View 1 (cartoon, rainbow, N blue to C red):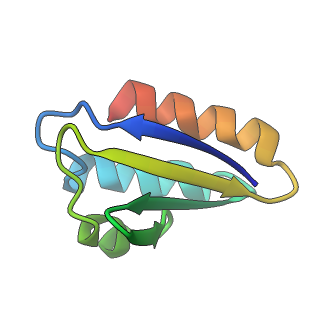
View 2: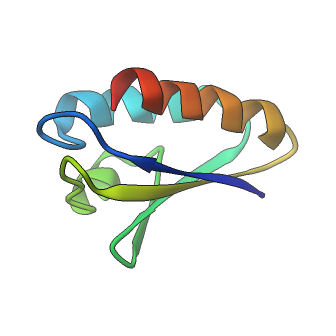
Length: 85
């Protein structure tokens, strides 16, 4: 498993539009992506689970990537976070 921490910089946190983009990006990967925040975790391919985390601007999340291609997938999803969240 590979993981990284990221502080959300989007003005309104992980809201519907970026959450939808995140789901699409996570589904394109062969690895499993899990987001953790505030003691809760969510499968990154499930929109309502991500929205249920209630992540606001300035919140640090931990993103865990596990699977056969996790080394490449963690780089790809980290770039997604930097460019969109």
